[in-house]
Image (tube, rainbow over all chains, first blue to last red; front, side):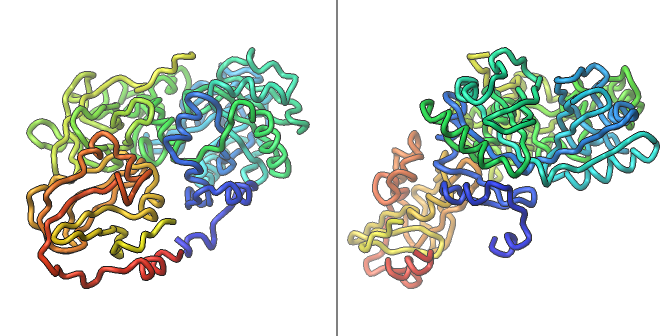
Length: 372
Length: 126
């Protein structure tokens, strides 16, 4: 661990996490807080009150110019032409073999001006990929802002009340997957985005690195009366998994197609994109494996890379994510299984330490937010 | 970090409390802290005779899985029944209500390789 930390990147809030007693780990090339008070507690804070995540490791790539939309339409599976300024879209970038380069958010800032928010682990890969496709376009400026932009995710049912003190923008009126640009906690040109990766509601706020400590302190002051707390990556993972959201590197990667991953809803064949013909054929023929959610009905906890068996202990798939759900108090997971075995209600078995542990395929999200 | 003086310890962060021919075994305060919130303790070796360093079970935290090793030879008599429904006792009271197994050992059992509290404190750097 010590050696790994030598060449590791730090977010602008690194000292703050250490001061708060955050347990720091290497994640996607960054030293990040995996937990502070404890993962189950932090998870509950976000479900029931409000928590703050430093997600400054995420990447931001700005694409500007008359060819910005044509390029984005080419690289992304969702239809970005349906965006208008102030709207956000979830999308993914298919690769040359029909797998996924990355999943991302696309922000339409204004005409000919888009901000792509990508996974930290993929910043360099995405940058190289986007620039390779961009060679076919003329009127483009592509800028990697990842090292100068910081991001906080403020999530939970009390996020609106906490944050409203810091801005004149009416946060309660903001629709899911929209954003505003304005002054926030005295910081000019902040991006306030009604998005998140927890299913608990709330906002993601982007500012320049030099303002992030000011933003962090203002948010904690504003949220004090609601017992706001810092939340680490471990709870971010349990929260997203309860919602059945994909994590790049676990549930989706260079070899999984968006259709197999259940991302057909962001794969629009109304336009041409990288390998859209290939994916269209896959859609017409049907996929051979599918990402499903499951609950363990026996005892044990599924983990990434555990085998999925049928009742005869034949291999039918692989677990991509798993945890004990802090809200549901059940062991839950996601994984790819052969199409024939992928129907809701099917009984499957997880190979946990060479023992078949019974599970049942269920609908996702595993958890439904009672407030939404 | 609590390291009671009346216990013995292993390099794998288990503790042992020996009372005549009976030993109680659990994981240390340091271990539970490193693991984080414990959500499942799986011990299916009750009734078995195991040797020192053999695996007697598994402890699962939200993010990690760790094997549990026998600190000394013995027969596993009982596992802590409270851990079935309250595995978090390992976090809140690792040396008390969070004990894991009760083991029958030979009188004058081999305790070679086990650490006293001061040596264990050095091991974990506290």
